[in-house]
Image (tube, rainbow, N blue to C red; front, side):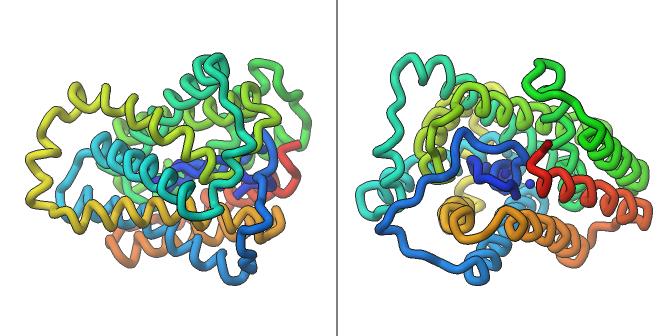
Length: 337
């Protein structure tokens, strides 16, 4: 998946890893259950895996942006579909050759569960990935990372609306901190684009809805990031294949010769390795360590986008994002309560 990620945004408990994004290890909601671990899986210390995860997570976003901006391969739907197809094949190869997907043996998906849970969540996942990647065509990497900080607020608003969670004074303060911080960051954005902003806002809404739906529909189901990818990647790839002809047509296929197979394969491989790293990450560190790693990754990514892509950020954005990060850390370390 491309982004990113989803993403996952690091939680107290693990969740599905989206592209870049991002999407899932960074998600603030707890997963259906804690990730299962197998006895045969090798143990890696947090000090060893966190730098690898940070490099891969940042690398996915920077690599995708390089494709969109430098190589002018501006086809996010195709890229997301390719990543999901690669992931669907990759997880099945790992399932047959390693113990990394042994957790899939404990997950039993009935036809009813698939139709009522996996499919609608897959639709939201596809929408989140496509929209979040499309936003990179209009907005800077740094600004998108700042907007992603609003995801916990969207989750809380949805949870409060459907009475899944009760509001509290502490959560109200967190919502105010993050909202005001993101608002200040947006006001200070030097190259604000309304279309890109609305696309990223929709991506946040899709991602928040997905995480809330996971909590409701898949409560108690044990899935680590790779097992989740094993089930969702083929579903999302098929959904995206239905969207691709209407959104981008055959144009990305005409560009494949210019881009070359090495670029596409290495790009998808980096995204897939991020999900592998996520499996070891969620079992190696405490909630606080993972949260701080996620915050450090976001700061590093924003700094890298300024140095690598020459993006400009204003002092007001730095101030606003600092407030939003403070609310984000407070939310995650308090368990969202």
